[in-house]
Image: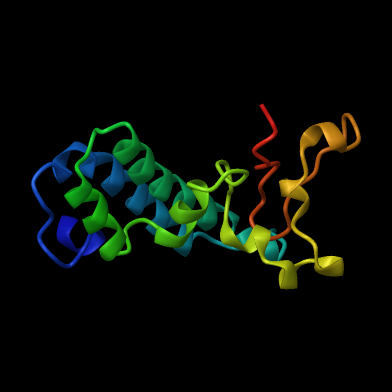
Length: 146
């Protein structure tokens, strides 16, 4: 079962450092995909899936950044699409360090050709009002937020 959840190729040496966490997250991802959509708005159905997808990519990226895994293991995770290479590429750019998903920065998905409400720093928004991204449910991923 492990091999089906992870990549098709045999993982390189050192992969075992992140394997238990990855398997746990991927099992939770499969559960979220089959979860009931009763009493949820159309957009809310995909939110748990996107959050787990983000967590998996963040785990791989942070493990590599903190030198817990080798470049070979990192490349394996990207090549086997265990982690999202495009999302990680954005995290490496200034201003996108906390980006929740790629949909939030695509102008065509938003009114007036702008970015998502979750990309606006919380200090610029009304105090006490809760904002959620329609696409992924994020409450704020602007890099200016502390």
